[in-house]
Length: 489
Ligand SMILES: *Cc1c(COP(=O)(O)O)cnc(C)c1O
Image (cartoon, rainbow, N blue to C red):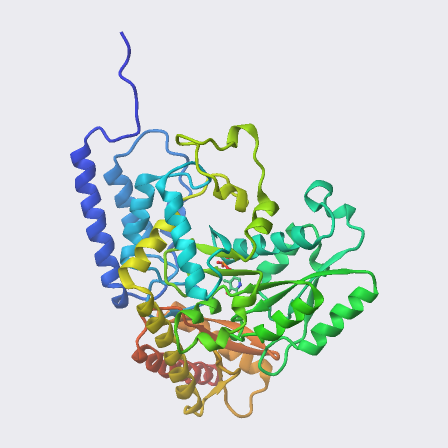
């Protein structure tokens, strides 16, 4: 009578099971042997060509699709799973984290709302995060895609809470006074995106100069706030950095908390990676004052080494947090019983309605290792950075370009007789060679006009010997490039 229904489930479950076992074996071996491969290599044209094939119309088997992945995709990673990757600030991931992603996708819940246990897992993870960072246990929070979204959520709550009028109803165009936020020139670019999306415009984000340690200049901050007030602006909040991307600098967070208290302003901390210093008892004093923030944004996929994506916003006031985002139309109303029960739905605390089960990999990872081990590995990264800084200082051809307060080391190859411009070109060439020869992936920044090779260390696979090798190779490449230049001149 009826054609048999179609479904996307496998016709042969045993075959899929065998493929799944093979995939797990392959992936674990891939991670186990990562050190033996180049950190990075460019994607060959053959593969790029292949990735222009048109939309598949006819089916392939899952096994064939997987083989395509193994041949064309898997050999060309960005490299952040490798022990000698220290580019930008990108975490490493873990084998159990990989498996956790599979479990989360298996249950495939929607974390936007409803009465189901996965939401309780996220609540527990948030409670653990508060404990990790010394934040009050009755604070609010939400897991998000990463630091950018975490900062956006924090600044949204700040704006909506302190706008002084119903900004959700009227919009920023109705503001009697233009609103402003403050942070140092070393702030991350995602904060600019956040104020832009909040409708305030990039200029509303006041960039305050820094001192020699790359920390926000407190007097300059105070002056900027006072002069803005005098000019009719409404200062809303201050963004404190717990670990800047350029150098790892940590602002004087206690002083910022005092200032915000005095000025009745919101204190937001961007602690994307640096906030996690609090996990190590020895390092915790570096971020003191952070626990006084009204909101904290941080990542679990950077210095907690969890698979990308997962970040978190914590907000001191649950009410302020909910009021910034809650909208409950009929089709989302909560009931007393059944799957539509539960009083707190996460869609009322952020932008997303449908949300993934990010919490599971955090929950499982924290159980797997326990928080003390995370503290030790974070501390190990710092010790390794200090070791690298010492190697640099003991190597005449190398120059350390910034203090190392945390896990970022900026340095360059230098030789007498070359000006900054020539050194900038030389160090850029060294970086290209490090990448293209598959040796290591640091990236770069510019400090006082100097191109710095920049190591940002959130890698639990790195050994001390990897930094010996980095220093050796930078010196070798510097000499080699200079020699080739002379020969061709
Ligand atoms: C990485 C980073 C961000 C942005 O976080 P994402 O997870 O990349 O979105 C913000 N601030 C700082 C200091 C960062 O290092």
